[in-house]
Length: 437
Image (cartoon, rainbow, N blue to C red; front, side):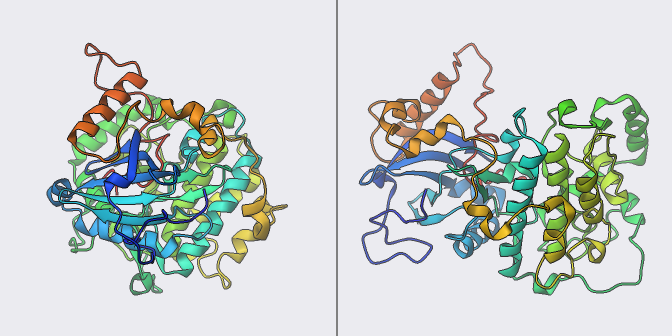
């Protein structure tokens, strides 16, 4: 979809013009694409133009209950800065009513990179292509003074041409210059593993670190017991190639950088760590840090314990290894001028034309959802929008959408309330605000 705002927008957060204000009644709301602790993302169709968008609907009372005001404000500001730039979700407009906030965003019709990794056709060449596109996005973000701080396959979406769209900026940091890592002589504090509360929490401490402190604050007796049990745990095995890949749970814990866990200042190199974790997963199918519990995952991150199978591509291994360094200043590209030139020149990216990458056909075909952007949209509309749906999102419409969701996955009153359509992960079209910041 082109990055153009809805035709009648005046409340566009990306600088819209002087028409009337948008409201929920300007859209038909369809399939639920994802949901979080205070928001849901719906596929929506503008009434006047029939163009498809992903609309993130945030409940004000839940934002207040979850104390996520800054989270929402920060995400909107970042989307404003990045909207219209290649490789990022477009934020077309925002509006509100008495009970909800609405973010009208690009509909990423091909889901997430996470869902793509399960395809047998995802090869090393695919990993190289998407790693290069993510690197371009990192260059753009960091040049604009934005740290993402939650890079992972679930937060990397795919447009109609199967190109990358970065999403979920609720954990991001703006104007990071104040936190850039300073030269230091002391070694990485190993004591932070067993004494996570040595560094007092600050008002701006990320939710990832708060969660890490809670997990690392568990009794050592329990940790030792888990450590002993983990010797036979299958989650600690590593595949030698993509043919041996397995599905594993996705969460910030597996991608978070050591400095976020220990509360030391972040820098663009913090995103390079998570980028390396994502690259590792693209190559072999699972994240590099896996264990029976989050406590053990955090321990492995703080010690940088990574295993590579015999079939792991050597050039990819070299790149990942040079990025997964405990000290931020030692990560490949941390001091590059121009930014990330050493990463671009790494042998793993041999043959990649970075300047033409966004116009190069993706190495993997799109899904059937792409027809929503073509002439066949009318033939499949009933699969995404309930029949007879009216514009707006009042309680009656929400009830109909819930019934539509349950019917689409074949859930009856006797079934469990767990859906299987991937709304919260693989089919996510925007930053859902899951609270997993």
